[in-house]
Length: 442
Image (cartoon, rainbow, N blue to C red; front, side, top):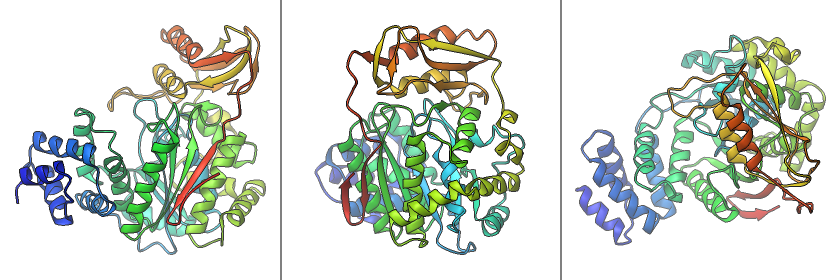
């Protein structure tokens, strides 16, 4: 078998077998297939696409390229959740304890933030003492004891994906939906869950900018899950503006705690209830999404979700008293108001620009090696549809003393806000859901 023959086969619209795709993945990982051949193959995939069976075979080959997490010692149906990345997306902090509180085990590996999207692990590490690295034995033991653990992603989880993604990033082949889908699902499958719920973001703050492309990606990922025997569902949600009001690590933990108390922002609460409900259904603890949603709403109102969050934080060495006193979280030295330059209605917010603004303050990383400041970030005062007066506060920056980036950040935020004379039409948060039965618009 030769790589050049497989490149030509895909270039000409042929369908590669599982054996051929495994040959490509293994050869690229061990250095037998050079970058220039793998990039030629990726470009052929970008133009020619892949069948569902090809995409599933590629996904399994990448999942098998490194560590495989065996969750069999954990009782029950293990359900994982993945977001394609957004701004202000702190849903895992809420959904994991919420779903665990009704008896669905959550054994989750999460990543760190890079660029304008935040990482769950960074947010959890803003809690004093919290440990994101546990031994496999402790990880499994904790899920069996309290139903929940969230740890950092293994460095050897789907290494083929890491290597291929880096290549795609510099060869203009990132946009291929089969390659995006296999990238996401290879890590989820290697992480060992029995069922997977996907939050596919769409809009200005997301990788996929249109609903149509987001649905195509969701359909591809659900098909992969089905092909490899994992129950999978995907929700398409809006990221044309940040989720909730907080952007930044400690600020987002604070907002997550408020949501677990039943006092969170309406959009964040609704999304968490919806994603959590799908997890509960796949986990076998409810007959349908409506029933599961009501069950989870009760857990927010009766304090059980917050109690599970406390157990989770304490079990991983963190200071669980933050759940009662959020002032124990890191706090920035200064707060700076960014004011509106005109009166009217907020008609649009460029979520990506707000995410970049938070990164410039120190809440995110421009490179993998960059250090972050857990205390800094942005609190949004005005969202799409809100009326605003000239000089009224749009956002509050939480920043370090005498931060030289503040003026640049303030200008970026003002340009990210569109203010018009007329109130815009309301854009729904939840756009569609994709399951094995098909795609349904909300």
